[in-house]
Image (tube, rainbow, N blue to C red):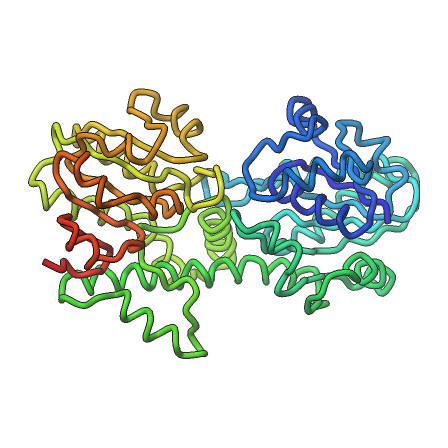
Length: 436
């Protein structure tokens, strides 16, 4: 099939590569001329392991192309995917400006039947709204052209997006059209996965509910970690015991310094706003958001208590992205930690293999190291903020000779406390009792 994907961001690019891999001809459209130029040079504007290699292959084979010309791209295609961003507004609502703009353009340009698929994360009811926008544009043209609007939310994990796109645990498709359902079945016939067909609204809610529940697990274990810290209980062992229960499972029960990224914070704000608009406040989700907003500061208060004052202390921050295997720093805990340290007049040296250049634009006056070991030189304390392999696997035996003081604050509970203590470090985790 011929597919147009509008929006060359993280979701649009990754999804397009997979469609091309499955034998479809894909055209990706974006207004950002510089981004299109990069793609046409086989350069991925963001980091996602494995995607750039496939991109180069499929551009060379003419299976995928990139353009800013929407009109020429829509005409020959069978399906149009909307993958533009839906950032948060100040009041927490999802900003649908880009999605609605795309819908208007589609209404102005289509001349025959199309399946129009929203893959952008949008509030419940957006599908009906977009359908109305397209119909309104068609009426202005005095045309009656049939189309179907489908919701097909993405469930890609940054850092593992290629795997998730190739081997999805489920494909959710919201439509009330038999014709559109058959086309979507054809599109996903190469995918070995359960396909759930439901209504557009149900599909939109499945996306929000999924992210909200995963965030709830994270905030639950993080709040529990605070209590464990006070009463001398190891939250890692608690989580292990909980996770062995099949009703609970081990995933997303890793205590740390909070979640970040482009999805969880934004989607929870949007869901809470929707709930408030419908006079149905979601108290559990409010608590989830509060715990996450305060988790990094809670951790940094632990650091402050150990030293008494952070003024004049040299702190090494290891990891800046919100998670490993991505260059994404949106809502990253590292940003809160840097702000806390600067406010308390500490000096900072930071290291991250992919995110340093992005953070440098926000905090140009702190020091940035090119290797993890360089970041440790002369440090009074080191903070593990993102669990990159090159950070976890530091030669800790040699590293102790580089630091000024051997204080390790493990914000991801990723190191073996007993090993670190044996090497001479003073180790502090999250809900991970001081082992001294």
